[in-house]
Image 1 (spheres, rainbow, N blue to C red):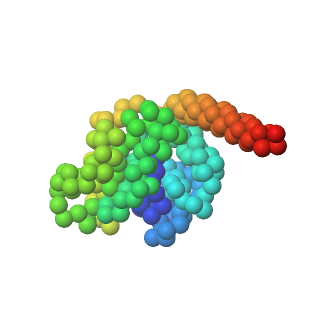
Image 2 (cartoon, rainbow, N blue to C red):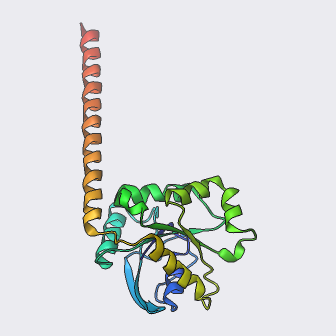
Length: 224
C-alpha cells in the first residue's frame, strides 16, 4: 500500500501504526519530513504487507517534477504494484488542496488509480459523531469519498495498541481492491498526460502567433 496526502495529514504516523513500530519519521511540522519514498514490510494477521511512505503533496518546498519522480519510485518500490493508495486526510482540517488530491492522483496515475484509492481519515479520536453523519454534514468530504467509490477508513494513531483498526483496513483493501495498480498503468497515465500537455502547448503556440500577428497588423496599420 502507498501512503499519499498533504503535508501534516499524518501519513508517516499511519505507516507506523500499520507497521506496529516506528519506522517512518513523523513530525507535526508544516514542512514534509519525508523527502524520499521509503518502504517497510511487516506481517499482520498472517499477511505480509508492504507500506510505502511518500513526500507530502502540494509541498511548496518540493518542486513538482521532483515530487512526481519520487511518486513514480513508489510504484517501482511496490512491485508488482500497490493494491491500494491510502489518501490520508486529517479530520477537521480539510483544505482546498485536499479537495484536489483525488484529481491529482487521477491526473498523474490515471483513472485506474481511483479504483485503488481508499480515503483514510486520521485523528478519529476527535470525532464526536458517527462518521456517516459527519460525512453527510460535510458535503465536500462526502464528494471526495464518492470519487473513491465510497471507500474510507478511520484511524487513531494515538491508539497504536488497537490492532483491530489495522486488521479492518486490510480487510477493506482485500474486499474492494483485488488487483494491483501496475507500472504499465502508470506509464499509460503519463503518456496520456504528456499528450494533453502537448496539445495545450500547441494551443498556446497558436495563441501566441495570433497575438503577434495582431500586434504586427496594428503596427503596420498605424505606420500606414
